[in-house]
Image (cartoon, rainbow, N blue to C red; front, side, top):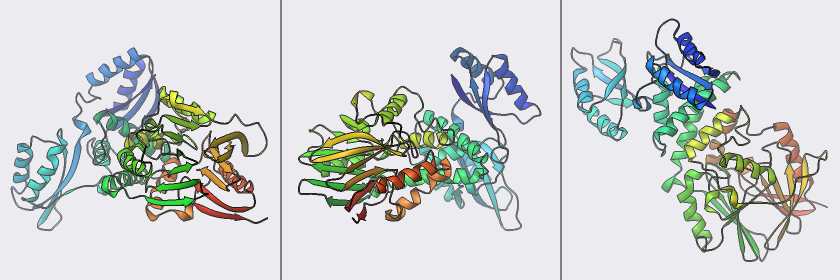
Length: 478
């Protein structure tokens, strides 16, 4: 088994050598190491592989030599700037307030600048984060004070506060436990390391993750205002599209007295989506709840635990079963995608559904040259869908559903309507390509699959529903 240690490396020659020897003497293998002095002078990430007993011994040994903190105070480091009068004793009032709140100082930086004001930067260990707002209010009565955003701070601190301050800021408006925050910190570092090796600036990575988290929080609660569109397919069939600013669309298909929800969005919007689903499906809490996923991405599967039956392809079922067992899903098996997906799951509170609710539809497609392969049929209400499965251009197990009689297609992320996105959707969708290098597993293959989707549509006027952006009207002339 593997474990990542977030260590505080002492400032002396041979510090990394000492940590490496500690790991090696226990028979553990170091599988990853990350240290960036330009980001944080002392924080060293070490991933070690060994038995559970060996890792427990490593816990004790690293703590004995001072590389692991004995408590979790490092989880809450707040970086503040106080604009003090440049006079003798000008900082005393702030220091007395810090003592009154029982905060510890982890970082100090100040330098006169030839003006009557001196800017004091302080990193504070804060065990009770509920006290920080009151502290800032009280400090503001003494002098102007501001919370420093990570990307506005110096690029090189004199102690290990960057990652912890960053993780605290990242989760300020999201319900993340201390344990999950530590794991989040590890995957933020891994994202930085992976993208740094691709030639991207670490600070661009941190900025993108930060803005992604801000958007998730900003559009929750009363600010959850998705675009909702209703379409009539026939006298017996309607489709409602719910387009939240963040995450996949959710489509409610009603046909001949039956109701099916296609793709479900992020788990962090559970209560907001429940309210909408109950409004649009009056018997949602009493009738059997059925959903279908086009593929097993985290932004499509967040609410699957709410449903009694979930239809999906064989490969998507394999992915969900892996996640339910604690193993990595398909995205996390891709080294370029793993950090972002881990971060996404932690920030959105994703939990995999129980596999006993899975109903596999279709069959394993035959090995033919086409990128989009026939995978059977799926009947629902008056609709009769042909199932077409891609070869994993976006994600293995991806399904496209086509009803030729009603000229209706659900394309998942094989085709998304980029031109039909709201401004908020477009802003949200710019971050995943940065943090994953591409949202597609194989971009060129996905492009071919997308082309083949439209080649398979027969003559007539089509409703094409992708999982991002509004419905696309598409005409095929005979």
